[in-house]
Length: 330
Image 1 (cartoon, helix red, strand yellow):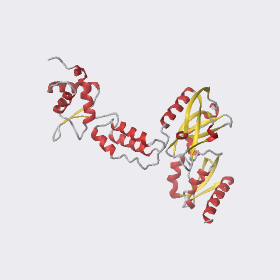
Image 2: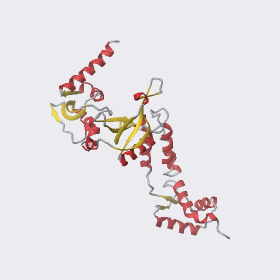
Image 3: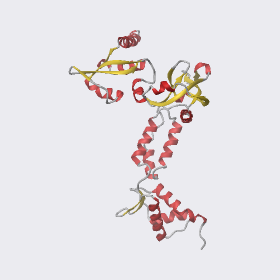
Image 4: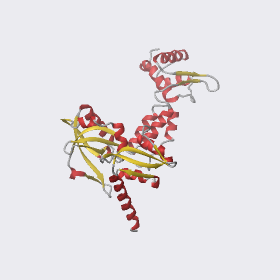
């Protein structure tokens, strides 16, 4: 009997079947493998299946034989374990910069990295509708374009927008172009930000990547390399609150003792916490003073206080007074 044209694909079909249908809770039998190959137009006998499984093991596939009540074979170790895939699904779901459509697309692809049974468990974790998500579908391509420009040491240009009350785009600079030198992509508060050097103003600026459009790399070298070399990015991300830049100065703060964990989470384990009596501690950290920094401090109520410099303390007091006045007017 002449062999089927699909016979040369036998091992590939078999590996595909094991990946898709088998796991520790759902082993497949030799007869199931024979039946699957038959559906693919490939004839097989039991002995040849054993030889094929051994060939797949030599190739590196973790083919496990399970005995006992639920006998059969399954693909053991995979590129990603199910708990790892669940973690990735959770991360994608919680990312505001990833649109709802792209979120569902990515999760479907992740489901393909496990068995159909594991994929159903991932589906049960999908709670996307109703979450705050980006409305800019091109954000993935934005990230790719910016990364390529950084790798090639090239400046970029783009247009930047914000949303109006009517949920329409309103472009800054009346729709004009920004031309800047990109240096880093920063993940902060579930959003991607671009850190770019503005040569005209001689300083770094931040831009939400999902609000950038028509990004293109220019055949112009980047500027600001010396300034970027002076930045420690791990420290920089601790100093800047909400990606709103301000003058970075040493700020001394006092916190209630039980807030030590919140301070360490924000500024790192190397931050020096100095006891101040039994109920408080003080800390001195470099901070880009901005309204967002004040909002972070205000979030702890009366259990956090800016001690110095005096200018930051006064600005915080003015901000608090303005907020209090807003509510007193009513």
